[in-house]
Image 1 (cartoon, rainbow, N blue to C red):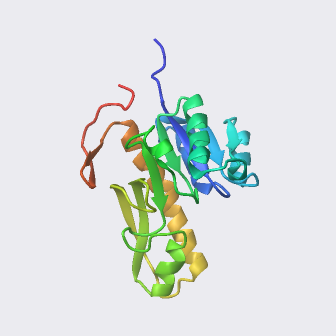
Image 2: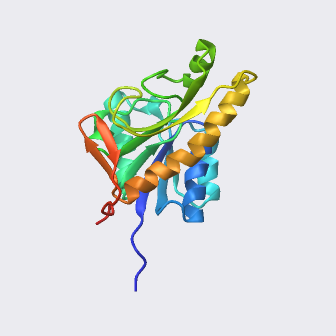
Length: 213
C-alpha cells in the first residue's frame, strides 16, 4: 500500500527562520501531516535558507532588485512555488506584501502568523507596539493573507499575558514560543480540511476532508 500523499508547504521567509524550523520539526515529529516543499527568501543572507538546506529542503533566494516591477517579482515567487508543486503557502517572518500573482494562484491557501492579537497592533513591530502601549494581554494570530498587511480571515489566536516584570525581550520569547506551537497546529487543521472560510470568518470544523482529497 502506498504512503498517503502529504500536503506540500512553500514557506516564505526574510530572516532567521525560527517559525520555519518549528514547521519542519512538526513535520518530522508527526504533528503536521505535511512536508516543506520549498523555502523562498527575499534576502540572500537569511539564515532560514541555511535551515532549509540542512533539512534537505530546496531553498531559493528571489532577488527583488533584478525585477523591474513588483508584479514581476511576485510572478517569480509564484513560479518557484508552482515548480515545487506547492499546495499551501506559509508566510513565516516574510517581510513583504504578497501580490495578486501569488494570492490568485493559491486562493485561500496563503497563511501568515502575526505576533499580536489582530486586528490590534498590525504591522512589522506588533510585539514592541503592544509592549509600549502597555497592554496586559497580547498574543499570536494565524490568519489567511490577502493584499493588505495583517488582514484576512483569522484561523487561530492565543492570548499571552504581559507580566508586570516582563521586558520587551522576555515578551518576545513568550510570543515566539506560542507561534512555534500554534502555527503548525493551524497548518495541521488546514491539512485535515477542517478550516472553513465563511466571509471574513474562518471556523474550525470538528471533521474535515483532506486538502488533497
